[in-house]
Figure 1 (cartoon, helix red, strand yellow):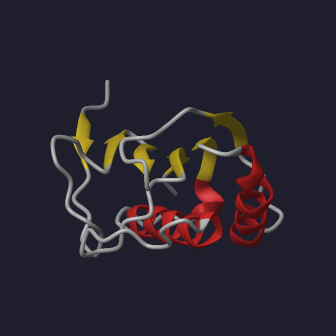
Figure 2: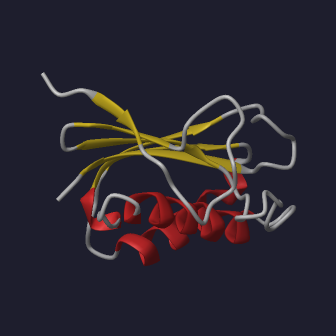
Length: 128
């Protein structure tokens, strides 16, 4: 059986008490990403589209640490705090994924770890 390994990722905000990703064989499990830049600063306060763009930038950075891309993502879970933001999230997601359509779940929640976070996305990818 494959041994799980924490994936070191550079160029992304530091974590506190969790890892950005773990690898198990050819599977990559990515923790929920919020709109923090590499310095740990929130991007897009009050702007779900700007937050979605930063979240996808974070996902690309993490995937790149193992030689993967968004085309290797097989499952996404998206949490958002306001259903009015769903069209903007979908627009950014469509632009990022193009014709690639991973399995997906979208849940509207009452809140996330900070009231300034408007969405959080976690992913599972198959490493090429």
